[in-house]
Image (cartoon, rainbow, N blue to C red; front, side, top):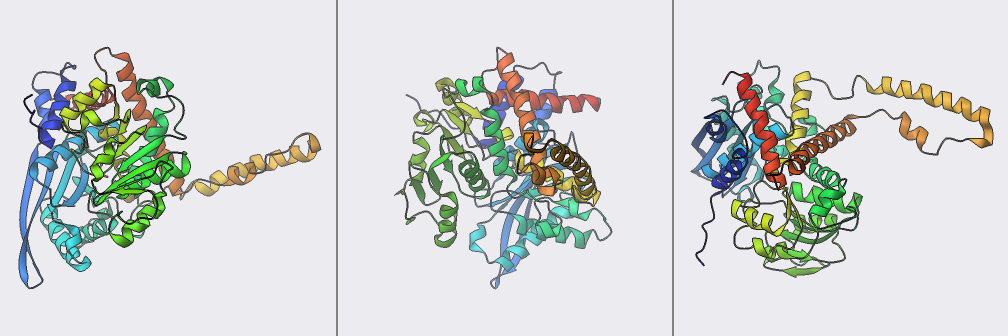
Length: 476
Ligand code: GLU
C-alpha cells in the first residue's frame, strides 16, 4: 500500500471547501475569489529581553473582506506558520458566515512558547506585536478585530486594547479593537466560557434530533454518554465541565500534553484542572489510570470524542482506529481531509469546527456590539422587565388569595419569574439561539440534499452561499 501524503492544514481546508463548491453553482471565478486568502502580513520584530535582542515572527492573515471588520484570534505557539494562519483565517470566514456574525475572516499568530517567558516579558512582546499590527490597521475597531486563541487570553487582549488606546488617543470606540478582554477592561460576561458553552449547546441541539442521533448509530439523550476530551485548555475545560456537571455526561478520558487520564466511572474535571495548574500535567493525578502516550486515548471506546487542542490530531494514521461514533470539533481543524474521508466512510458523524467552536466568535460579536454601544446589555430594560413581571405576580397572588387551597403558585415560580435578565443570561440566551439556528440550517441541507452526506459539507454549503450572496450584493 502506498502511503498517502497528509495535506497541510491549509490544503485540508481547501480540499473540504472544494468538495462543497463542487455541489454549488457559483458564477465563474467566484469560487476562487472566495477560497483564496486575500493577504497575509508577516512581521519580524526585535525586543530587548534578558540582556539581548530576541527576534520574533508574527502573522496576521486576512482571508475575506466581504464584511468588515474581519475577525479572528491571535495564537501564541511555536508551531505557528503562514500555512496554519491562512487555514485558520479561512475557517473564520466560514464560521462567521455560518453563525451570522457580521465579519470577514482573519487570524493572527506569533511564533513563541508563552511558557518560556515571564509575564512582564510577554507584555513587552505583546505590546510590540500589537504596535506593528495597529500601525498597519491590522488591529482596528472598524477593520480588524482580534480575539484570544491558543496560548492567549484576557490578559493579552487587555494589553492589546491598551496599546491601541495609546496609539489612537481620539478613537472613542477604542475598546472595540479587540474582543475577549477582561470584564473590567471592556469585556463581556460569558466570553471566557463561550466556546466551551457553545460546544455544550451544539451537543444539546444535536441530541434534540433523534434522526441525527440515529445517524451516528446512537440513541437516547446526552445524559450518561461517555466523553473523551483532548486538551483541557479554555475550550476543552469548559465543554467538559458543563457536559459533566449539567448534562450528565461521563468524562471517561482527558488527554493532555504529558499523557492521558482514563476513568470509566467519569473524571472530576475541576479536580483535574486544578491538578494540572499545580503540577503542570496530568501525571500523578490520584484517580483513574494514567497513560504516557495520550493520543492512544483518542481511540478509546466512547460515544462522544471532543478534540479541543491542536489541528491534525485525527489523521490518516489513526482515523480508522477511532471508535467514537460522534466527533465534535471543538478545536479548529482537528480532523485532516484524509481522515475526514475515512471517518465518513465508517459512518462517523462529525460536527464540524466552523460550527462547533463558533461560540467564541459569537460572544465576541456581542462584546464588540457592547463596546460600540457603550452600554452593558440589560442595563436599560432589566428593572422595567422586573416591574412588568411584578404586575403579573401581584395579580396571581390576588387570585391565589381568592381561590385559597384549590390553587397555589409553584414555590420557585415567583422568585424566578420576577428576576430580569442580566448580561450573562442575555449572552447565554443569544449564544444558545445562535447555536440552535446554525445547526438547523446545516441539518436541513444534510437531510434534504441527496448529494450531501455529512454535516461538514452542509456547513460549507450554508456558509459559502452567504459569502457568495454578499459578494453578489457588492456587484462582484
Ligand atoms: N479564536 C477563536 C476562534 O477560533 C475566537 C475568534 C474571535 O472571537 O474572533 O474562533
